[in-house]
Structure formats: structure tokens, C-alpha cells
Image (cartoon, rainbow, N blue to C red; front, side):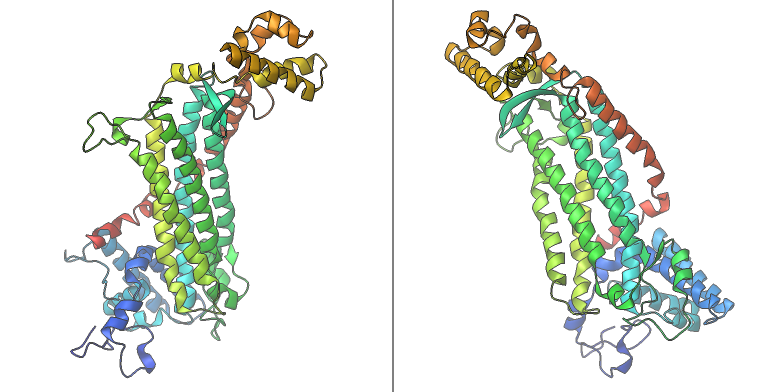
Amino acid sequence: MANSHGTITTDNHAALWHGRFLEGPDAAAVNFETSINDDMRMAMVDIQGSIAHAKMLCKQNLISEDEMDAIINGLNSIKTDLLKGKDKNGNPFKVDLSAEDIHSFIEATLTDRVGEPGKKVHTGRSRNDQIALDERLYLKHQIKMLKKELVQLINVLVNIASENKDTLISGFTHMQHAQPVTLAHHICAWAWMFYRDADRLSDAFKRVDLSPIGAGALATSGLPLNREFEAELNDFSGVTANSLDTVSDRDYYLEVASDLSMIQMHLSRACEEIVYWSTTEFNFIDLSEKWSTGSSIMPQKKNPDFAELIRGKTGRVYGDMVALFTMMKGLPLSYDRDMQEDKASFFEAYDTVISSVRIFREMVRTAKWNKDVMAKGCEGGYLNATDVADYLVRKGLPFRTAHGVSAGLVRIGIEQNLKLEELDFSEYEKASPLFEKDIYDLITPKNCVEIRTVTGGPASSAVQKQIDSLKNFISSNKSDDVDSEEDDWDLIFENYYK
């Protein structure tokens, strides 16, 4: 707490490092260095980690069972009061935002409640490995949460695809009409992007899932700690291999931040298409009024603002990722205070991405698709020109020659203002003697789609295989649901910002 001179006094709520200092830092310095506004969202995992640490200390005979029980009961009471927002007497209870960080607040509150045993909870532990522990525990939870949201998004996309295997839509390259596909095929393309995003998160999880506790400040401890036992209590798959590396890197944040940027990029690309498709010129999609906005001056407007905002927020996520990489690029081993800045950037990126996933999911789930308009778009632009060439290839003509023949027919169609399927058969006969009148049946948009049965193609049978694979992925990931109590972790902190 600040005294009349604007410095910090040394009571139970003083900074954990104050011991060798006779005078505390200036109040302005404290305000500059505090991280409580960022790291308070890790309160629950900090409590979890301290409970496990107390159990390990007792197992190693570093504290008594009575002391362990006092510590655990005290920590659980803090957890209960935080979740309720009030103490056992009904008084408001919140994180003290004047504390240096969440670790200081919880340890000081614990000591207030249980006395001397509370002063033993930090035995064999540094804030360096404690911070790394909290970050990894919290990140494990958040990865599961985000993956769960992605799986739900994929499920929505699969449902849309399942209903639109025969819904024709033009495929584009260079934003020019290219070849006919189906809406199901296009929506599956979105789904596979998010599938890979979820898979990347699962892969990153393996590297996050190693316990750092016991690494100490940088060189472990001379006390008989049991890192493996504490890792097991915290549900880690193992422990980190090198104590110096453990406390001096944040590559787990950098890796997941990269994954977040990829997710947001995929969302942005899909939103770019939605913005195009919702224009009068395209009119492929009609967004729900719940996920659209109007104009302050033009009464007729219905704007795809949510798609545009997701697209716009991508720059923020990229910026947070770059901030993290830049923060780490010149740091010597081991811990440096620069690393305190990791949380603000990562949390902002994570919050932006998970909210964007949720908004995007509901936006597409409630949208209506103008199927007739999409199908009509497949009739112009000579989307079947490749199929004319393929027809000749099946008759034995080299593809490059067949390509030239088809291009010539396209030129004739442009000159006569006719589609390929509208050209008189005499034009086909002049172009190549290999043409027969069955060409007209084979170059309809529907046939151009259904003939493409190659794996990954737009034919309904090929798309169904994709849908089945995605459904299997969804089913196999239902077990990844996060505990309902942990779902509320972030919610309890909303009051602290009000």
C-alpha cells in the first residue's frame, strides 16, 4: 500500500520481492510495473497450481499435513469467494487491483486467512516458474475452449454443406468465373481450413502440456522437490527438460499466437466472400437481420458489418502476434521482465479470435442462400470451357490441342453473344470432327460438376466423402469439452472491469 510519501509499505500485501529493500518503489513505478489487470484472469489456475504445490511439499516432508490442509482450505475459500464475488460473511470480494500481480494477491490473501502456513506455500518456488505454470495451465484450458468452438463451427458448416450438395455455384479464380462447383463444395473448403486450425491447436497443446514448476528462478532448487508428482497433480503429460529454458521462453505463446493468426486469417477470407456475396451484384447470400446493420442516412441499407469487423480485426491479431515475437527476439536467458508483456498481447489476440469464431458461426448458421441466383451464375462466363476440352481429350486429342479448340469456340461464342451450349453444332463440327451432338448433354453445369468424382472434387459423391470425414472429426472431438466450471473462469472477471 502507498504511504504518505507515495512509496509502498511492507505489510502482508507488499510485493513478494520487497525483502532486501528498505524503501519501496515510487507509486508511479508500481502502477507502471503491475500486471494485475492482465493476469488476474489466471486466478483459478494460480490457485490450482498452489494447491498442487502444497501437496507436493507435504509429500516431500517440507511442510506438515496440518499446514498443507490449512493452505488448501484457505486457497479453496479464496476460489469460492472469487466465484461468488463475496466472502462467507456476504461482503463483496474481488481481486485487489492494487496488488502487483495475481500471485501476490492470492498469496497475501491466503496468509491473511491462515497465518503462518500461508507463508510456506512459496517454498521451493519462484515467481518465474509460477508464472510459467499459470500460463501453461491457462493456455491448456483456452486451447480446449477454442478448439471446441472451432468444432462447433465446422459442424454448422457441415450442416449447410449437407443441405446443398446439388446447389450450383460458380467457382472463381482471380475473382473471375472459372468452373461450376456446388455450395456444399465451397462450404467444405471453409470447413477444411478450420479443421486444420483445430488440428494445429491440438499439436500445439502437446508442447504446452509440460509442467514448468520446480524450475525455480532458473536453476531449480536445493530442496527435495518432486516435479513429476506435481506435474501429475496438475494433469500435465510430463515436465520440461531444462530449468533455464523453462523460465526463459514463451514459445508456447508464440506458437498458439501464430495459430490464432491463421484462424483469424481464414475467418477473414470467408468474410471477404460473404461481403462480396451479399452485394446486389452477387446476391448469393442473405444475412439475417440479427447479423446485419443499417445506415444512419440511407434507410434501404443492410450492411454485412459483422463480416467486415471480423475481417478488420485480423490486423489486431496479427499485431499481437508480431508484438510477442518482437518482445522475445533479443532477450538473454533466463527470465527478463519484458516477458510480463506477453499476457496482454496474447489475451487480446485470443479474445478477438474466439469472439470472431462465435460471431462467424452464428452469422452463417442463420444466413439464407439464394440458390437460383447462384445457379444462374453458372450459366454465363463460359465455365464449361474446360469440359469442352476434356471431351476432346477423352476422344484422344492432346490436351494442349483440345485447349486451343475450346478457346476458339469461346471466341466464337463471345462474337455471337452465345453460350457454348447455345452454339450451333456446325461450329463444333468446324472446330473438330471429334465432336458429336452428345457434347450438349455433357457441358451442362450440373454435368460439369457431377463428372468430377476425383477425391476432393465437387461431385455430390465426392463431397459426401468430405462431409463424412468432417463428421467423423466432429464426433471424435466431442470428448474435448471443457468442464462447465472452467467455462465460467473468465466470466467472473467481467465484474472487475465494470
